[in-house]
Length: 377
Image 1 (cartoon, helix red, strand yellow):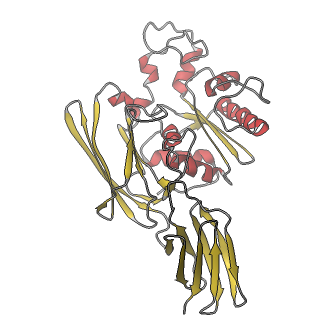
Image 2 (image 1 turned 135 degrees about the vertical axis):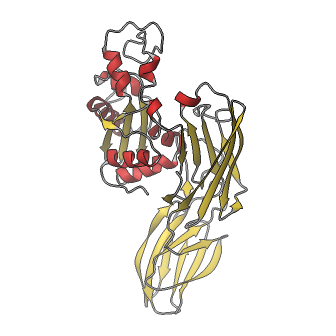
Image 3 (image 1 turned 30 degrees about the vertical axis):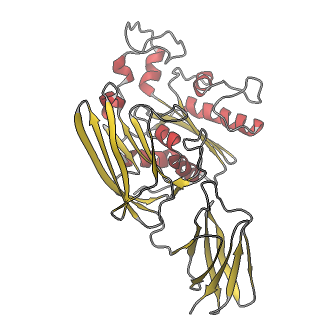
């Protein structure tokens, strides 16, 4: 189980350690690059990885350019960012639900990071210290990879490039085996891997370490999700072959449940591949969050539901379509009842705790729904 604390580096490393990946260390140049990009986003009100040259606080067009401008020698830089969360923990949790950003945090070839928070803006720049140090040396490698250093013609040897990758696990699953409190839902990210869906279940990803599998032919045979032993029928699998944003690599595979996961449920994942002519199968499971909190599922636009006083509930409004989210939430009640707690958990769920006499009612309305909650004995 991953415990979240205020330190973003601690939280990210707890996630990485949970799947066997190396921890990250802070790099001052990457922190400075993250800081200046956060300032750019705030000043220009643009959530973007690409800066405009004439924007305020411009520090470089790409994440690599910005890192170089802050005395980082390597162009091997991966950037994650988010906006709107209350703290680092919420930001990181949201980014792990966004599969492209998740795979950035779970990259096999990073070992250092810079993080910066400005109001509700969070920027994370990640790199590789072995590559960065090699970029500082006047070496004359004849074979390897170019384009990784400030001097794009400089060649980094394959040994240096793969140095971090080769100590990491061969395969990473997320959610990982035995994971507790897995989020139930995924909304959207930019770019959006599922542009036709505004809300769906938390994605499941499998990524193969390129050091071991980069040159091997990987054929996906099946990728399935089971809830309490029953196969989840509505899913969509995304690979490098059908990724509309052309971001996934041939070593990365993602399954999206097209409906959100059920609170408190246990899920199994089964996946079969043929790798270099040999069958390779994986099977693992995870638990979804809020196992101990009662959930009321609202289906349709109207309904009457019974609740106990002084008990916290999750009221989940099942989406009416692929884009449905709660809006204009209002509630109404009379004397004899009081609201102890009410608020949004996510765009389709609220949490609620009331006190009052049996028979007292609470009316909740949104733009599309009207329900009545009745206190029972």
